[in-house]
Image (tube, rainbow, N blue to C red; front, side, top):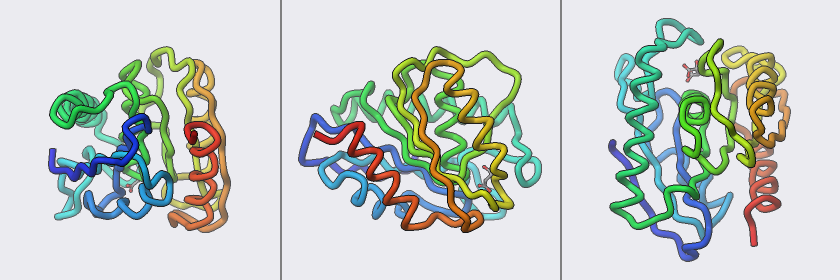
Length: 203
Ligand code: MLT
């Protein structure tokens, strides 16, 4: 997958896996990685699907309606890419924290839904429930921060609440931060995510 890898200055820190929103690229979220942990290595990936020229991590049939078959295929592809990238760049595959916005948050949630041990944690900005009605893996000890908008027209608040419930139901430890700025990725939610990250993973 097209990506940027930046070696961090502290190899004991998690690797931040940056996953952009629809129409974004692997460059978009690099400033966020720097705000969250300037010492961490960063793996920022571009989605392999194009929708009218806009990169995404999986196909959708309509806004908010996912192509499940493609979601499953692309989630596997990303999971396999993480194994390859860990071998190529020499980082610990079990120490990845995903940071995703919108479509990127949804593929991160899908990694959690489909693969035990795919992520040590995740920061999900404006996520949805990637799939419903499936058995989730045991996520005991996985740390998840959700930032969502009470008035987000793209990713309704109920989606974040349901996602939170599904994740905690299989043992994940979650925190939710609410905003009132629609679908925007705001500085206040990024600051809240950084604070959460430092409490969980800072040393
Ligand atoms: C998705 O398709 O993943 C969600 O609708 C959010 C987005 O538009 O990226």
